[in-house]
Amino acid sequence: MNFGTPRKANTMAAEDTPPSGPFSGVRVLDLTRVVMGPLATQVLADQGADVILVEAPGGDTNRVMGPGPHKELSGIALNLLRNKRSIDIDLKSDEGKRIIAELVPQCDVVVATMRPQVLTRLGLDYDSLQQLRPDLVYCQAQGFPLASDRSEEPAYDDIIQAASGVADMVERVTGTPSLLPTIFADKVCGLVMAQAISAALFHRERTGEGQHIEVPMQQATAAFMLAEHGSGAIAEPPVNDEGRPASGYPRVLSPERRPHPTKDGMVHLFPYLPRHYAQLFAEAGVAGAESDPRYVDQRATLTHSDSLYRDVRKVAPQRTTEEWLEFCREVGIPATRVASLQDLVDDLEIAQHPVAGGWRVIPQLANFSKTPASVRRPAPLIGEHTTEVLDELVHSVAGRPSGAGESDTVKGLA
Image (cartoon, rainbow, N blue to C red; front, side, top):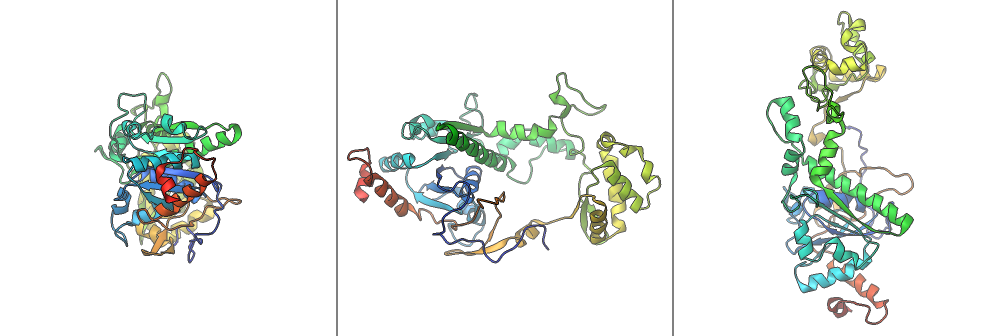
C-alpha cells in the first residue's frame, strides 16, 4: 500500500561520493543530543553539510531510544545520525577542550542544545567560540528565552508542549488536557533551528558576518501554535464568534474532525470548499444538498464545522473506501485512505548498514532539482570517526605558520 513515498532498492550513496546538496562544503560541529538538535543537524547533513557529532564516550541518548538492530543504533538513531561523523571526547577534560579549540576554526557552524550555564562553564558559549572563528554561525536552543528568568530551567518536549498551549488545545477537543502523542515541540524546534542556520549562512555569504542564533523552544512552539490558533484573539481588542473563545481555530478544534468509517475500512473525506459539500451530499442522496445554508459560503462552512463533519460521517458508510476515493478524485474533493504508522514504514526504501544490516530510510524533507540531498553515510557507531577527524586537524595545522596555536593533543598526533 503506497501513500505517496516512492520506493527504491537502495538510496545509500558511496561514502566517497562528493556531497551534492546545497550545503556541500559547509562543516558543522554538532553539540546536540536526543532528538531536537540531532534532527536539525540531520537536515543539514542530508543537504550536504559535513556534520561532526561530538559524543560523550557512552554515546547519545537517541542511540538507546527504543529497539534497534545494534546496541549502539536504535531505530531512531539510524536516521537521526545518518550522514554524520561521530567523535567521542570528554568535553570537560583538558584534552577535549583542546580538540574543540582546534575544531571550531575549521567549522562554519556550531549547534548546541545544552543549558546556557553549562555551555559557559565548558567554554562552549558563543562569546568564547566566536573568538576562535569570528564569522562563526552559532545556534543554541534551550527551553526558554535567554533574557527570561526561566532560561536555565531544564526543558523537554513534554514541558514545552504544556507551556505552549498544546495541552489546552487538546482539552478543548477532548475535555481533558493532554499532550500530542508525538514529540511535537522537539521536531518543530529542530526544523526552526535548521531554517535559522540556513538564513544565517545566507547572510554570511552576502556580508561575511557570522552571528549568534537563539531558538527558545517555548517561543518557537508558541509561535507555531498561534499561526492559526491565535485566531480572533490576535485582534486588539479581541473578536470572537458568539459562544466561542477568541483564541483557537474552530474548524481544527472540532471534536468531529476525524476519519470516517466506510463499508470496508476508513477514509478521510475533507470537503473544503462550499461546492465540495454540495457535491458530496448530492452524491450521497441527501435532500436539499444544493441549497444547504451551512455551506452557502466559506465562513458558513467554518461556523458549522461540527454538524457538517457529523453528516459526512453519516453518509460515509454508504460506499467502500476505494469508491469514495474514486468519486473524490473525479470531482476534486480532498480525500485519502487512512495510513497506519506501519504503512508509512512499509513504504520506505531499504538500505544496508555495514554493521546493523538492513534499515529503512526516512526521506529527506525537501527535493532539490540542482543540488539534491542524499544519504551518503550510514549512522556511525560511537566515536567511529574520531581518528579520521583528528587526522584532518593534523593536516590543517600542518599548513599553518609555526606556533599558530595548535594544541598539544593535535601536535602529538602528527
